[in-house]
Image (cartoon, rainbow, N blue to C red; front, side):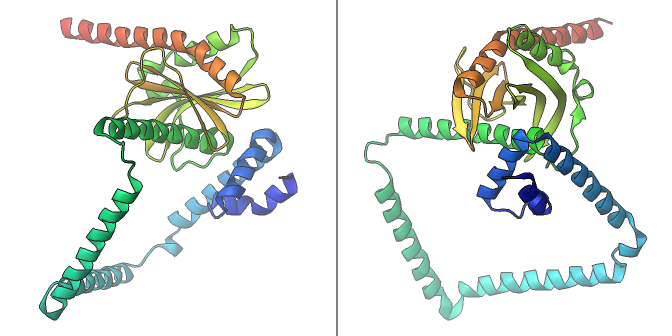
Length: 294
C-alpha cells in the first residue's frame, strides 16, 4: 500500500469500515511509514475534538419529550416481541414449536457426532480448551499492539505508567536496561497502561531493526498459566508473539520481527522481569507490614 492509497481510506479505517484484509494492509503500511502514523494521529485528534464539540453543544442535545416518547415506543415494541414468543408455545402452535425444537436437537446431536474425533477423551478436550484460552489471550495482546502501538484506535486514553500503579514504578527501566545491555539496539518509544477490548495492559513500546516491538503485561485471571521457564511462541495476524509468565502476570513480546528475533527479545527479558516484579511485590508487602505496625 502506498501513502496516497492510505490517505484515501484513512477515515474508513478510523470508522472500522474496511475489510479485514485491507485493515491488515493498513497496519503493515503504518508499521513502516512514520509520516502516515503522524497523519492518522492528527486525524484522530481532530475527530475527537469534533465529536466532543458536537456532544457538548446545546444545539444537539436530545429533547426530553423526544427521549420519553422513544422510551415508551421501545418498551411497547419489546413487550410485543415477548408476547409473540410466548404465543408460539400456547394453543395450536405448541406442537409446531415442539416439533421444531426436536428437529433442531436431533440435528445438533448428529452434527456433534460427525465433527467430534472418535479418540477425543475428556483429557484431550481439557487440553484443547486450554490451548484455545492461551491463543485467545494472545489475540488480546496482538489487538493491543495493533490498535495502540501501530495505529491508535482505543476507546480509552492510555495512562502514563508512573501514574498507573506503584508496582510498575521501576518497570520501564526493568525492561529497558536488559534490552539495551544485550548488545542489540532497542530504541525506547513510550510506556503507559492501556485497555483493549476491556482488558488492561501495561505497555512498553520499542523500535528494533526498524520494527515496532510491544512488551505487554496483563493479569492472567482465569487464563491458564504456562510452565516455569516456558516461552510460548504463537503466530497470528502476521505478528510473532512470545509469551512467558511471571507470578500471576502474562508477559507478551509482539512484533513483526522474525520468530528468532522476537523470541530472543523475550528471553532477554524473562529473568530481569521476574526479579523486578518479585522485588516490587516484596516492597509492597513490607510497606503494608510497616503500616500495620504503625
